[in-house]
Each structure stands twice: as structure tokens, then as C-alpha cells.
Length: 450
Picture 1 (spheres, rainbow, N blue to C red):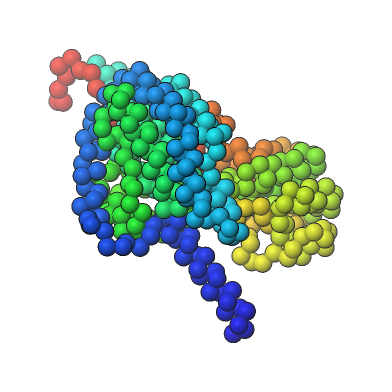
Picture 2: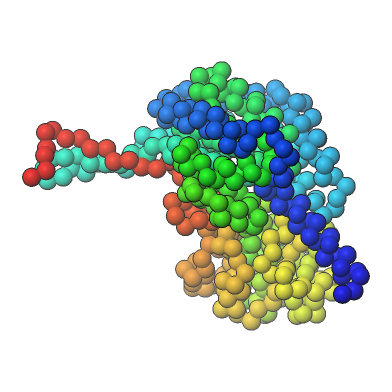
């Protein structure tokens, strides 16, 4: 093996191990308590809190959410100081720029977190909602009402705002939450969770309703995944290493929020200006998010004019374009793509481009490389749009719109816990209603079964 190749492989292994630590946690370093000894008292308290939280009136929950929002804004300086401790561990490493962007807090982002809490307070409480009752021939009235799931465990990666969003949505839907953020954001998440839980308790929310796991070691995650006595569902948000760990160890039902390998197919019959605007927005507006586009599939009939306009615009914005041989022929600013580029979630200013002969080839590519997160077509052809919607499988399939719009707020949910790539219970942006389940309610007047 060439020495440079050996060095590169070593660097890739080191980088991969960094990703695993970010998503799952550090190896244990002789803790004073075992994972079970540490977790069990927290989970017992969360389970007890869930039973008190479920019947809590909406006005109490809303008052708590508003108090939590105020507390976040008041603690801006404290949060920025905590966040800087996390940032310092990653700054200076160009390969971690996407992590740093997701991790960084600013006064504006803290204000946005507070705004989201207030938005959740304004949303309709899903608990107790019903689609109606039917009267059976014997006079029995039967219906279903929404009730909290119970205790929700959420394991997530670097974005500190997830701590606030998850706590708010679980509280509003009557669930206790057990939050375990990535080890790379441990100081930020610990500070946010402490501020939120203290504000909530002062507003008459039961102690333990917002529980944060402040130990970063990996064995804590394993123990959490096996705590089916206390936790009703696990929601993991992260990359392949986290999903693999969850799949291997969970004894609790899981709703995955997996990676987003999102595609846009630009059809032959298309408004080129609209296609350019959509593709650029989907990649550049915030590239470190799961609904940013990672691969552009362009019909060969429009590839030359579209790349002539879009290619330089992407380069000017700092995007690295990795293209198939035809792409590189038509656009000199593109670098040759390798097989691994198709199917990769870059989470950075990198986009893969492939020129296809028709929509069938585009859809075949999506079936092979997509992660069933978000897929889009840009076209003027109504029938092809309908076919794309019908045949492409993803949590959201879009026509003439940026993939960045696959979002709970943009879809009118007010806020989201994340974008589920699981087929059972919830798929796509998970809002308040998705954090509840249903129970049957039956009104009788003395009926018995004959």
C-alpha cells in the first residue's frame, strides 16, 4: 500500500471514530456509579412525573412554556459561555465545520429557541382531542381520544436547539422526556436543560418532567435503550453509528429520525429559472440540515443551460460540485464524483450531480441511493409530477419546491420533534399529535354482552 494511502486511511478511521463519539458518546472512564445506578433514579422520577403530567391542564403547560422561553433569553450570556466550551473542542478542524455550524449558539439562535417555545404554547393541545363518537346499535357510544405516550427518550446529535424543542413539544403533549444529547454539545445541552427544567418546575410542572442525561459515556446510551420498564418510546436523531447502536440494543419501540440523502430531479420540461432557484436554495440556505439536498439529478436535455447558470452560482457560494463524467464535460468547475458521493449525506457545502437520460433513470437512482427522507421533482409536466409523487418513496415527496421546506413549521405543525423516516406510527415531520397515541373511551347505560 502506498504510504500516502495508508495515512489517508488512518485519518479516515480517526475521523470516523470522532463521529461515533459525537453520536453515541465517549468510552466510560471508571464512573463512580454504574450506568444503571446513575439512570434508574432519573427514570423512576420521569415515570412518576409522566403520570402527573398527563392530566395537566393546557393553561398550566402553556404558562410553563412561556416561563421557559423567558428564562432562556434571560440566560443568554450563560448559554453562550457554555456553548463556547463545546465549540473550542472542534474549532480549528476543517473536517468538523458542519458539526461546528450545527453546534454553535448565537444570541439570535437563542432568541429563536425562545420564539419556538412561545409558538408551541400557542398551538392547540392535542391531549383529549377526539375525531368523534359513534353510537352502536345497543346504544353504546364508542370513540377514541388522544393521550400522551408517557415517557419519551430522545437521543440526538449536536444541535443544542433540539434540547429546547424536544422539551417543549413533550411538555405540551403531556409527556415526560429523557434527553440525551451528543457528547460534543454536553455543556450547551446541560445548561439549556437546567434552565428549562427549573423554569418549568416553578410553573407547577412536576419534577422530572424534563430529564437530561449529563453523562456522555456510551454505556449510558446502551442502558437507556434497555430501560423498557420506564421508557415508552425512543426517538434517535443522528447518523449511521447511532442508528446501528439503537437497532442492536433497543428493547423499546423506536421511531427513527435517520439521515437525509435528499435528491432533486430536474425534468426536461422545466422552468430553468425556477429550477436554478430551487436547487440553489436546497443546497446553500443551510447545508448542515437533514433536508438539504445532497444530489441533483438533471435531465440531459436541460443539463447544459442549467449548469451554465447554476454551476458558477454554486461555486461563488463556496459549494464543491462533484459530478458524473457528463457533468464534468459540461461544467469545468465540477470535480469528478466517485461512487461513494452518491448516497452520502454531506451536511456541508458539497453537492453531487448526475445527468440522466429520463425520469426512469432518476427514480432508479433515488431508489438505490436515497434514504426515504425528502425527494423533489422540478417540472412543468403535470403527468410526470403525479407519477413522481406516486412512485417515489420518502417521508415527503415534493413538486417544484425546495427540499428545505420538509419541516414541521413549514407544514403548519407549529414545531417538530424531527423528521421521522420510520413507517410505523409517524412518518415525516413529527408534531404534537404524533407525540400522542389514542385510547378508546366508551359511554354505556347498563349494556352487557349477550
